[in-house]
Length: 238
Length: 238
Image (spheres, rainbow over the protein chains, first blue to last red):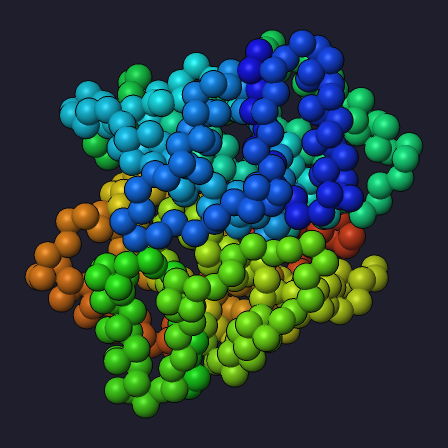
């Protein structure tokens, strides 16, 4: 497979950097072709300007996305989202006609998005470190469930332009990392990387395939009646 | 009151710019002192570097926050979050000991955060424009309920360092804006600005006041038993 890792951490001595290096070596050893967009090392410009047209830096990232079969977004969770430099990568690379504004809008379909679009057929996976503890991000944890915290990214930035989204690879409480735990974490990461092609994606509902009223884009009344919230957009919701 | 508007839009001809100008004039006419951090105009540096210490640009923003009684964050919703330049404002201005890492960690309390902290006693409000339609962000809308989409910001960036969070001022379907609708929108905005001091904030639960187990920071079993999701962290949840 062709695998693109979009990576954002400022410190080459960080846990994230070590895991990124581990991932590249592991994937290459398994015969995959790997490209890394190391946004800090590239000094990626995060700021989308008024009337900006796609320059060479943006076109290069779009080419990498089109080349990739699987895209891994790796970052530390800062203020419950991705670092600004990666958010700026999304804003600048997902141009109109590429990341959004694709396809027709009619009574039948509302653009090629949420399961369709430029990046359809590809897989994506988040690889996220958090300083907080796992229970803080559990179903009743104060930070909100991690799947809800990541919804704007997994559903809104990865599934939106068409990618299937694999369950995220998460590491909590990163300040408590010693050699023994690093070995455990990298082994678990290796297993996830070995199964990128076989892991079942999160079954987000496709927008244009009957589950939503168009153009309101609300879940049809007979599906999970009376329910609301983010989890109703996943098919497995009980 | 002292009011700080943290503002991010690249285009001085935009709807956001017009609403920002309207807000400044309206607030000043009512006798308030207003400062604006116009991040694009200031060419704010969005990228947090490794080992960064707070420079003059960061200290100036911290002083503005400490000066303010109310802070308004105004931005267009891009990819279901704030623009990268504003995310980078949060990352760089919320330094350790200012925005996080405040207060003791013990069996009784887990730092001064979520209702306590450096910015306690202040109010905050989001003022957000979205291209999508209101039903797309409704309780069963495909983008997720707007209050859930904004949870990482309202709860994770505003309430976290201690600010009370007023209900957001939202404008949908911004491509359909003519003079008549602009007048309606700015009148509605004016009413919100006139009631900044009297509007009831979103009753997010305070972390250290008995609702959460410490250090797991999960909502105590007897509160909304069996429930989960983001809305359980708001006291009014039925």
